[in-house]
Every structure is written in structure tokens, then in C-alpha cells.
Amino acid sequence: MTPTRILLLVTGGIAAYKACLLARLLKQAGFSVKVAMTEAATRFVTPMTFQVLSENPVATDLWGEGQSDALDHIEYARWADLTVVAPATANIMAKAAAGIGDDMVSTLLLAFPGPLLMAPAMNDNMWAHAATQANRETLAGRGVAFVGPGTGFLACRTESTGRMAEPEEILAAVKEMAAVLPARAEEADQPPAAPGYWAGQDVVVTAGPTHEPLDPVRYLANRSSGAMGYALATAAAAQGARVTLISGPTDLPAPRGLARVVAVQTAREMADAVATSLEQGPHWLMMAAAVADFALAQPLAGKMKKEDVGEHWELSLVRNPDILGEVVPRHRQSGLKVLGFALETDDLRNRALAKRRAKGMDYIVANDPTAPGAGFGPGRHQVMLLGEAGDIWASESLPKPELAARLLNQLAHAEESS
Ligand code: C5P
Image 1: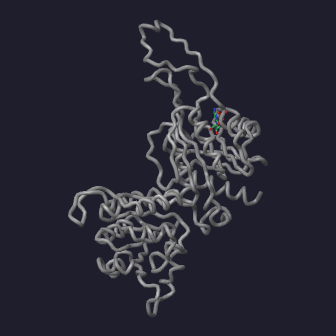
Image 2: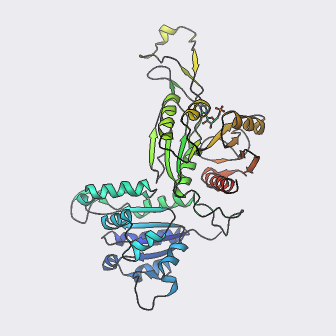
Image 3: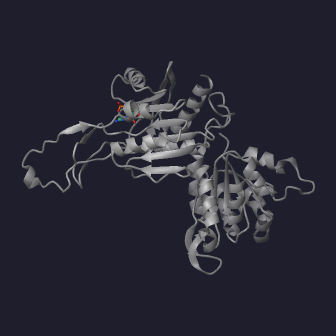
């Protein structure tokens, strides 16, 4: 496989010198790197430095004399799999939010349709300014991922927030995003999905277990880690979807680039959050959460004391709302596509097919966590994707981020050919 291609956009801040180290770290990590710089950035670091580090010509000027095709901004935007703006000034954030393309870097940002990571760096007041914060929110709402800024010693000689994330931290974010990039059309083991099926789709993903309280300190739960739902949310956002993640309690960090993350504890809270999200008219609902089927009707207000329980504690549980089966039909607007999950340890395929029909899902992912190459947690997993017409895809055992990206490709195909 050819290396992932990173377009590094350097804008005019003193942190531009740290972008040199980032370019080197990216190369050392095996990425292909091309760099474009704003005019202001060239006042801090010369294009020659980046040319040497990236081993590629550096784009600086839209109108440059004798510019080769390789420096054409459309070509650069087409070439890249992932774009990183480091450092990202308040100015480039404002231009990107407004869609202004008046130099090489801002024009590249308009021309590049893929995943974008920004590492802001600026004076603390500029970062705190309402305009910058509004621009950050606009960009995050479009799926742009951010790393930093951190707190530390700024060039303006204050100790405050606005310092660019360290190159190592940016590299880690790039690796995380690169792990869920869809396979390039020329390398995929299937015909390419129509470019950008997921771009602009509103996708609601549920993930993780739910916790059903018994008393203020005890709860009923299951072994779901949330890894599959988080991987789906991350992969959909990386492909341009506006993702709302409704998550039960997990130990996972919130994925980058999501439009919204709603944290819930119980099945009832998850049902309410799903119902509220469906009112926004999303295109997709992906129910990857392992919603608890039962809860204590009336959790105790104070901690149950063992002395009061004696030798046996009999719990009387009641059914939780079936979100897919009962809640979704009440809030389902026309055109909503629903993907559910079936976790079974025997007769997987038939049970999944029956569940899909019974709960009115368009697609179902059937998985057996006890099968070899599959399981709970962050590791590998193996699934079957089933739809109206039966089998769509049987995956091999894959790391969950890759599995999620491949699942999205399969869904895009299934939709395009339906
Ligand atoms: O019936 P079962 O729980 O196996 O169905 C699994 C699918 O239904 C999953 O997509 C899960 O998120 C969803 N589910 C639900 N509400 C529940 C239980 C499960 O929507 N109370």
C-alpha cells in the first residue's frame, strides 16, 4: 500500500518553526508529505526548509511565475488524503469558516474535500475572542478536528492558552485520523463508492453499555467497551459526516471531529437522547450501543446496606424501552436509514435476520464476540453485514477502526445500488 499523503499547511505564526519538526516526524512515521505556506509563514521559516524536510516542492503562491503543474492548488488538494493546518492562526480559521480563498493555503482548504486537522496557535486573547471561538465551533460542526491549543509560555511572553500542540501530539492525532481513512479507490478491494457518500450526511451513532443504577453506588452493566460505536463515529466523521455520538459510560476519549457528543448513563436516558436527535431529521441512525434490557424499576435513593439485605438480595427488574423497536418508530421521519447490531453467540445469521425484520432496521451487523478474531474491547473484530436482500458482506477479522471504515464503504455501496 502506498503511504498516506499528508498536506501540511503552514500559516504565519512563530509556531511555524515547530511545524518543521512536525514535517520531519510525519516523514519518519512513513507518511508522504507536501507543504504549502502562507506568505506570512514564509517570514518565519523559508520554503526551502520544508522542501528539504518533505522532499517535495513547497507551494506558496497562487500566481507564482513558472509554477509547475505539481504546484497547482487543485492538484495538491486532489493528491492529499488528509490535511493538517499547523500552526493554524486565527486568520486562517476565520477564512476557512467563511470559505474565503484568497491565497494558496485558504484556496487549498476550499479545494480539499477530505478530513482536516487544525492545530491552532495564537495569543490567548485572540484564542478567547468570541469570533475565533465561533469559527472554531463552525469548523468543528463541519467535522474539522482540532488538536490543542495547550497552555504554556506564549511568544507574547505570557503563560496562557494559545500555544500550539507539540509536534508529537499532532503526529498522534494524524495517526489516529489516518487509521480510519477509507481505502483509496485504486487500492480498495471493491469498486469505489461514489466520492463522498458520507460527506454531509447527518449520522447519529449510539455506543457503549448503559448503566442501570440499583442504588447511588451500584449499577447493572454489560461488557460493551464502546470501541465499535466510537470507531464508527470516528470513521463517519473522517469521511465528512456530521456525527452525533450518544455514548453510555466508557473509558474511551471522545473522538475528534464530531459535531456533538451526548453522554448518557441509562437506557432511558439513551432512549430520550435518540428521540431528541431524531427530531433534527438525521439521515442515519447507527445503534451500536449495548443497551441494557432490564433495569430496577425504582433505584434506591440511599446505599443499600448489606445488614438490611441479609443473605439474599432479590432484585426485581423491569424491561427497558427497546429503542429501535419502540422509540425509533415513534420518531422516525421518512428516509431515515437505520443500522442496528445483533450480538449473538449461536445461530448468529438467522437470529440477526429475524431481528432486522422485527425491529424495522435497514441493515444489521451480526457479531459473535466469542468467535475467534472477534471480541469486546479495542482489539479486532469480525462481523457480517445483512440487509433486506440478505448477506451483504462478511468481514475478515479486522482492527475495529478499519472494520468501521470498511462497513461504511459497504453501506455506501448498498445504498448506491439500491
Ligand atoms: O434485541 P437486541 O438487544 O439483541 O437488539 C440489538 C440492537 O437493538 C442493537 O442495535 C441495540 O443497540 C438495539 N437495542 C435497542 N434498545 C434496547 C436494546 C437493544 O435499541 N433496549
